[in-house]
Image (cartoon, rainbow, N blue to C red; front, side, top):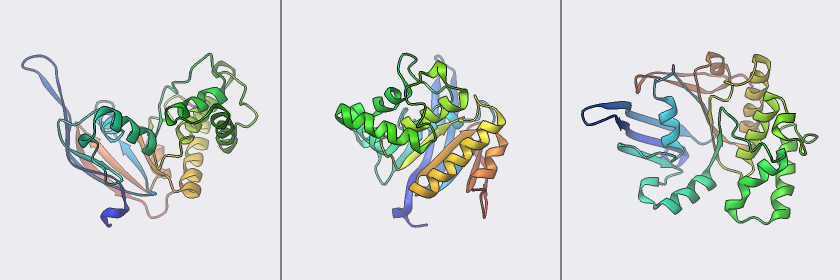
Length: 237
């Protein structure tokens, strides 16, 4: 694995939270991770294992106590807040467990909203939103509000919103946590299609063991430490 093939790289990554004068919690401890461009990996672990902390650090939503994160060869800690926000907007798409859709907005408006920080004009924003919604199978739901969509459809809107900026890296936080088994399978199939067609690097944080069937590799965390890694010769498409 050569360095120029890495989409994400961490060295000695640790995050400690202070809980009072004499109380500190080590949420993540000395994590080394290398993710190739175009790879699908699962970050596995029970609640409190450190997987969400790791995702927040990879997504530059938080900063490490010690250690470094590299995104496409860039160290976000060397950037000011504005530059870090631009890097995040350009490099990363987020899919959150709770969807985080705006209730008063349609599916199209929710997706188009992600392009505003890019300075994209209104007509182009909405045209691109319609295209991406069609790509995730919601071309006939663009005018629906979140409360008019099923949980699986809302999750697909969230995926479309993450994709509309055309990021090379997709970070998904418990994406199957709010949907049923059938919808979860369809979502994993969608991630596989996006990975194959667009070459997206996909990192999925989850406690769902079925995700292992849909990724190239899993990294298991416990108490903030990497305790196991497993690669799969042929992840299910």
